[in-house]
Image 1 (cartoon, helix red, strand yellow):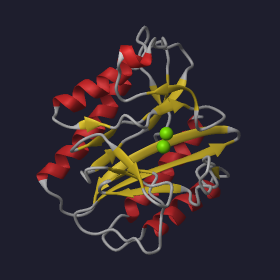
Image 2 (cartoon, protein in one colour; image 1 turned 90 degrees about the vertical axis):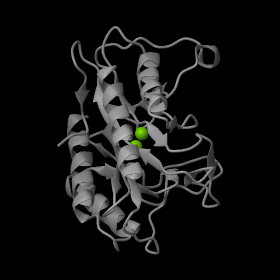
Image 3 (cartoon, protein in one colour; image 1 turned 30 degrees about the vertical axis):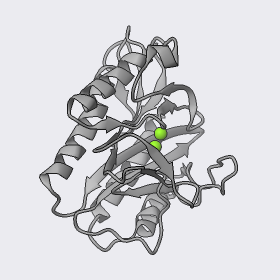
Length: 245
Ligand code: MG
Ligand code: MG
């Protein structure tokens, strides 16, 4: 999993270096896919199934501005100065998966956008800090929710982090918010657990809507969204972030 995570990090690095106004999201997709395949890994997103929808057609999600997740790369979609781009990708290497997402500003952006990006990244870091024994999954969820809402933003509730292993989506769900009443009991963290934490932070309300392409998820109120994700491993000390170089 560490190797799979490293390859995902390399794909992100290559995309990050290519970011500029004018580049298309399809170009970013090709960059990530080449890095993944050049390392002998398989892009997990490509062909990913979803009930009653076409299989996912690309190796990355490229979600712009009010798009939260699952934006489909396109030759017709190019980045503009002032955009927020959220890039998500995953690969499988020798049977194990890494999954990571990051959001970036394109060129000059307002201080409001800079702050949203900073809060999203910090939410992920706080969640990782909370991923220690004897905490439970709900402690991670609460770390995200408390921090984000304390900053005046919302966390997306309709999509969650997840266990990662031989498959991209395994048990348990790692929510970005928590309600004992709605979610019941929580799971205690244990050494060797591996999962993806992925706060999606929005400037407005947390309600979501899926576009007609049956994949792209946007905020209902069209407010801006950011998305930060790492795959981590629980140890008897600090968690290990697997999706780093
Ligand atoms: Mg992901
Ligand atoms: Mg994920």
